[in-house]
Image (cartoon, rainbow, N blue to C red; front, top):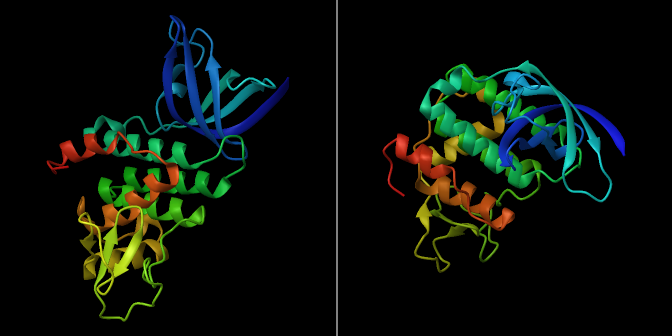
Length: 249
């Protein structure tokens, strides 16, 4: 057994038996970590507010070789985002961020860039960033940081470069396809505003974004579609944010 210490964000918790909780962390130098917080359901005194989703904590755990779930020893709150999550839309956005980050980050592999990404997006959300824009920005950078962002300059089907005026259609899980290539029925044309948003994501910190993106559309097909293809599963939390924003499936 080895003692570990790291700063981390709490991505979520789930019940284990009558008294314990399974805690999922995004640790700065250890990647995704899952451990058992003993008696956390019986008494909140030991961990207090440190178990709230997206809380930044100083974490201590015992790594048990050959066992998937480690033993959480201590979680000391360093930065709480609980107050902003009193807004249902922000709470729903945080749930999306937790799910997609947890799906992409690898277990116990250092990923400090994703750790910093999550922190900067949470700060921007607290500062007033639109929830859907925060989600789209995070999708873009999760894909880019992990080397799976679809090629935005070449057709995913024929490989030819796009002309500046060329129609680009986002096909979920495939990328962008030119006007000459066959497309799935689920393809959605990328608008000028979509292209501008992608450029903004690439060049601008989340707290300085001066625009909002609409839910759904081509960016959803392009970015969420690529994330789901990479993770090899669908995500459940988007529907809550869509419902709060009165957007259809």
